[in-house]
Amino acid sequence: MSLPPFLDAIDERVLVCDGAMGTWLYAKGVFINRCFDGLNLSQPDLVAEIHGEYVKAGADIIETNTFGANRIKLASFGLGDKLHAINVQGARLARQAARDQAYVAGAIGPLGVRIEPWGKLGVDEAQEYFREQAVALVEGGVDLFIIETFRDLNEIRAAIAAVRAACGLPIVAQMTTEEDGNSLDGTPPEEFTPALESTGADVIGLNCSVGPAPLLESIERMAGVTSARLSVQPNAGKPREVEGRTIYLSSPEYMASYAKRFIQKGVRLVGGCCGTTPEHIRHIKAAVRLLSPDQGRVNVPTILPIQARSHGVDITPTPREQKSRLAHAISRGKFVVIAEVTPPKGHETAPLVDRARTLKIRGVDAINIPDSPRVRAMTSALASAVLVEQQAGIETLLHYTCRDRNLMGMQSDLLGAHAMGLRNLLITTGSPQIVGDYPHATGVFDVDAIGLANVVSRLNHGLDVGGASIGAPTSFHLGVVANATALDPELELRRFAYKAEAGVEFAVTQSVFDVDALLAFLARIESFRLPVIAGVWVFDSLRNAEYMANEVPGVRVPQELVDRMRRADDRGTAAEEGIAIARDIVAAIKPRVQGIQLGAPGKDLTAILAVLDSVV
Image (tube, one colour):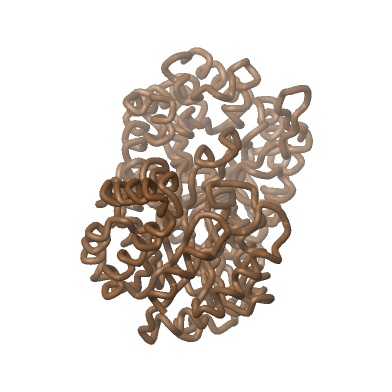
C-alpha cells in the first residue's frame, strides 16, 4: 500500500523522523575524517543497513545520507566530480530501505562557507550549488526535502529557493540554535520564524547543536509567532569525550519524554539529530503512539501569540564627519597622515605610548595599531589602542583582523571597543598562520573582511548580526585594506566592490612601491568615490628591501628600488636611501590620494619622522 502525500500525512498525524546518520556510521567504525556522503558509493551496504534500522525502529521519514553532498564540501575530499552520483545513490539507498513504509527526505545542509553579506560567495552562486544537489536527489526519488542545520537566514533562503526551482516537493526548513534559543548567528526565534515562514517552506523548525530542553524553549517561542507546521530534531544532549570516543549522554527514555512535550506545543514532525540512534527513535515512536493511540494523531493546543520584539531605538546612523576627528578631517578634504606603531611583544606599553606622543607632536593625525603583525603573540591591538588614546591623547586606527575570531566574538570585541571610545576601524581578513611564528597553530576564519564590513555596518545601524537591537547604534568610522598590486586584480576589484557595497568609508592600501600600479588601481576604483590612504613603507636596509620584495604576500617591489638599495648598501647609506625612496613615492602619489600611512621596521621613529618632515 502506497503512502499518502507527505503534507496530507503530516496534517493528519505527528510524524517521526529518523536520527543521526553520522553518529551511527561513527559507531560502526567509520572515522570522522572520512567523507560520510561518499560512503553512498564506496560502502552502500553500510548506509542501507543504517536506513533499514531506522525504518525498523518506526521512523516515518528517513533522510538521505547527503547532508554534506554539495560541491564545495565534496571538493574538499576530492569528490566534487561525484556529486551527482553520490546524491542519486543516496536517494536510491534510502528508497530501497523505506519501501512503502516511510517517506524519503533529501537531506541538504549548509555549504560550509559563508555567503554574502558575510562571505564572498554570492547568493546566486549558493543557489546553484544547492540546485544541482536538489536535482540529483529528485532524480534519485525523494518524497520531500529536509534543509537543516542552518545558522544563516540568507543561506537557508538560498537553499529553499534552489529546491523550489528544481521541483515542487514539500520542504522542511530547520535552523540550528544555541542554548539561549537564538541562531548561531544571534537571530532570535521571534525573527527567524516569520522569515522562514515567508520563504514558503511547508514545515519550519529546529535541529542540532543542543539537546531537547533548550529546543523546547525555542519551539515555544516559535509557536508564539506562527501558525505554521513545526518540526524539531534535537541532539541527544551535548557531546562528551570518553576514553577517546565522542559520546552523547541523553538516554532514549529522556528523548522520548521530550518528544511528548514537543507535540504538546504543536510540533508535527519530531526526530533526532547528532547522537540519536535507532533505539532513541524507537522510544520516540512509542511515546508518540502512547500520547495518541491512533498513530500519533493529536489535537494541537491553542497557543497564545506573544509580541515580537521591537527595537524601540533610533537607528539613524551617525553622520560620517561626526564619528571621529580622523573622519572629520577626511570629510573636509584634509590630507591626513597616519603612522603605524606596533604593539609590544610583552605587556610593557609605556614605550608605545611615548612613541604615539612624539608622533602627535609632529602632526600625525592618527596611530595605526596593527593586529598581531606577522601573526605573533603580542599585546592586543585593541588594548594598545585604548591605552594610546587615553594616555597619549591621539586617535588610533584600530587594525582588526578576522583571523582567530568567530562571528560572535568579533561582535563582542567591537562593542567593547566602542564602549571604550575607539571609533576608527581598519578591518582585514588576516594572514594564514603559516606566515607567522606558529606554523602549527590552528586558525579561525569565520568570516572574511567583506563579511565583517557588513557586521560593522549593521552595528552602525543599531543591529547585531541576527537583526536584534543593540540599543543605540555604534559610530565606527569604517575602513578596509586594498591591494593595488594583487596577483588577481579582477578578484581584488570584485572584493573592493563588495566592501564598498557593505558601507565602508575609506581604504588603506598595502605598502606602495610601484607607483604606476597604484595610479592604475585608483583609476579603476574611482567610481566608488572612497577616500584612499596609501601605505608607504620606509626601508631601513637592503635586507629589509629584499624581504619586502620576496617574502611579504601582496607586496610588489620593483627591481629598480631593490637595485637602488643595493647600491646604497655598497656606499653604507642604505637607511638614508630608504628614506629618499619613501619621499619620492609620497611626492608622486600625494596629488592622487587622501593621505598616507607611514610604517618602518623596528621601534625607532627616525625614518618615519624624516619622511614626515617632507609631508606636514
